Image (cartoon, rainbow, N blue to C red):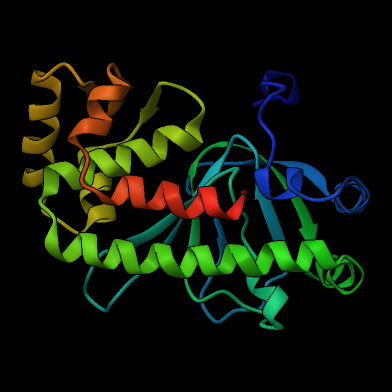
Length: 236
């Protein structure tokens, strides 16, 4: 994807929330890079070499147990970043982060971010608040995974993806969705088929198109609204 294909309105909301002087300092340390689907940006317990502020691309934070596929524990798009743990003095991430949606991001070295944190108090405060949101998100996702049925969970996940993709269509296979939600592929097939019958999505050979955003919001479990509320407090 070329830089010219990025809509002018797409910004990283964490950086956009900073005072102008601090935002300009951080922007000056960043380079714009392409995120390719499937790229692994960090591994658990490995030193962070770079941090990323997604623009049109988005990433999944996943965890795995021996003998099981990776389970998604959160999406990060232009509302957040990868590498916020550096604000706590922790030079690592607790989970693998893999690119789920190809697109653009702002990238800077971990050492550059440490320097900016030392002289940009609003940046440090913003990242600490963002870490609190991630903790709340982990708790919500854990409860959702345990208690909610596959269909409303799938809807919630599609809405979260739609928010970060900035387009109405994306490529997601049944197998990929099953792994991300920690369910059987047959369960995804049934749930996606039901959503398509109701005219909420169109799904063919891994290509998903959102047809009725409002209908999806009504069909989602309560977790989608809860996650939005967490982020609205961050940027209030």
